[in-house]
Image (cartoon, rainbow, N blue to C red; front, top):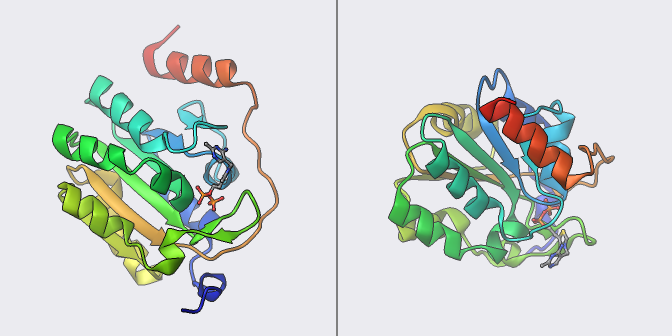
Length: 197
Ligand SMILES: Cc1ncc(C[n+]2csc(CCOP(=O)(O)OP(=O)(O)O)c2C)c(N)n1
């Protein structure tokens, strides 16, 4: 198996984040620790962003909790394959709960980017979208290129879900685009933007 192939994947992650978050309206956005938190921040810091500075494995389950608590709001989780692999059980719980307003998107660079680009299980063929489908998530898919992204965007942004997409993104190390660092501040800012003062 060619372990370096993800360095040649066509989709750059920051452009994918920008496309997913364009004209985002009242959408609530959770990002996993590390690279996806920088990606959503590069697309524009926003009070309705909840970038996780830690809690590896927790992004999808935090998104599930938000989606259940805020059924009128679209909730989008953008996270890495390493984070998703660490929280696979949450796919089963999402499938049981069936929150129609939840979309999970995995930016799959087939690497643990933050810690030095070690290959993850997906570099060996583990198929996260197939696992989500097998759990019982009704709308799933894997995006490899621009055309696939164009087709997936309206599903991720608007179709009744739950939705799960893997988006294969180029393995690239990018400059940091850091969100605010204080977790309590981020939580308070998010709460106030969502619920009022
Ligand atoms: C429980 C736990 N184990 C390990 C780490 C170290 N760690 C931080 S980020 C990261 C890799 C994240 O990889 P992924 O989610 O795929 O993101 P990307 O490749 O996009 O950076 C790891 C292993 C951690 N923060 N917490």
